[in-house]
Length: 68
Figure 1: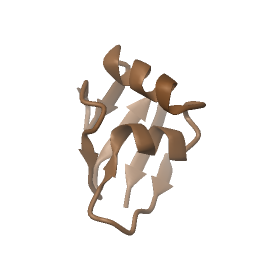
Figure 2: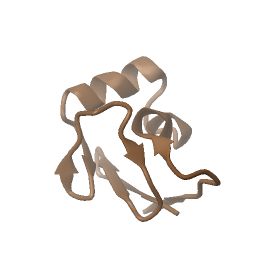
Figure 3: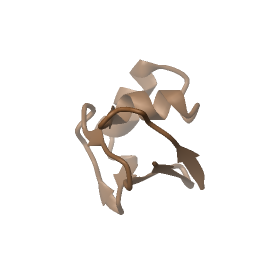
Figure 4: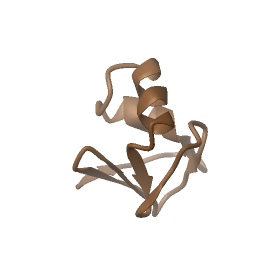
């Protein structure tokens, strides 16, 4: 599991996917979210601008990211 530390209240979902290197660019991040390939706390998340807050676990292609 990847732990990703943020200094702000939240990080947008597509920004998190890019920052952790799980996708190559913003277009790819938007596509995988739109296609229902990303889970937030075990549920499919379709909102690209979903606010990921500390404590949330994001899953994509077998990788888990815990935002702290």
